[in-house]
Image 1 (cartoon, one colour):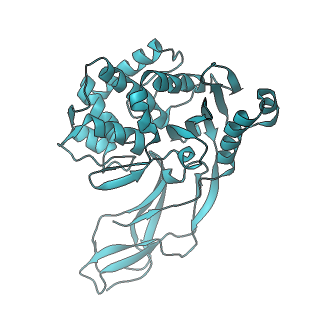
Image 2 (image 1 turned 90 degrees about the vertical axis):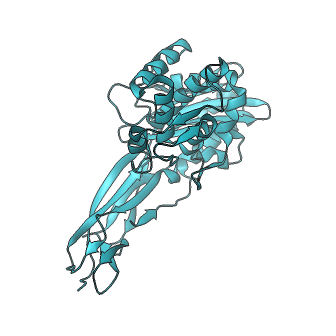
Image 3 (image 1 turned 135 degrees about the vertical axis):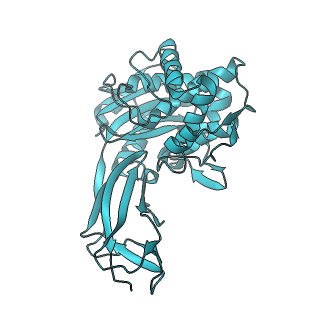
Length: 355
């Protein structure tokens, strides 16, 4: 199976506006900030951590799908269980077939590549969920703690309401698309502040640059960590309905800010020209062992503005392809994911004939 990954700069207009927002507050007055800063995000909420002062607000109580931001609540339930003595970091959790298929290596979503029917220590699962945004890690934890994702999601919602998230409901542990779950920017800032105050011994994981599991290294997807602005957390997310979202924290010169933003846009980008070879697939019993494949026209996509790491593509086909092969024969599909969402599928065809 062929692979192709996009790589673009995370220093986009919107990310620069995030940096500008944080830095202006550290250097200037709040009044100046209110007059000078605007964002193309549809929802945003920014507070000073020490005083709780609201520094910027734009549709903060509008309900949106949480996407991977739901993982913040998953971790709160885990951290609370450890703090109360119901779990320990050395506990190991079993990887079920459901967890593997829904969030693991075969799912095509964000994963820590936990092996089916293995056991994974809780500390590794925590790092997988926080650093790698691992859906399999979330499901493994949910099943281990509550028997099923459904039961665990009820715990998430109950716990959310208990700590002050008044407008949030969770249906699963990963944030994968599901009817009925939603959050608000105000609730997400409340949650981020709570994580920082209540669990300082675990909050450090949100600043961890990378994590390796099953011999696969993945870097933290939070672009703020690489901007040298004092950022030390927390999470990014994406849904087709709401666009890109981020919950961020900055600590600089003794002052800490928390911000949540959603509804960040995408940009159109041409990734393959008309007639361009997209990749090669294996051939069995032919004059050649590999076959070039291409689409019938150019391939373009609306790429992420805020998080380049969330866009990835894969050539999917049943192979090896048996010879003979005729030029123009349908071979497979180019599938492109944005975060956990399968965003685009493009048919691929043989670029040549093979006897």
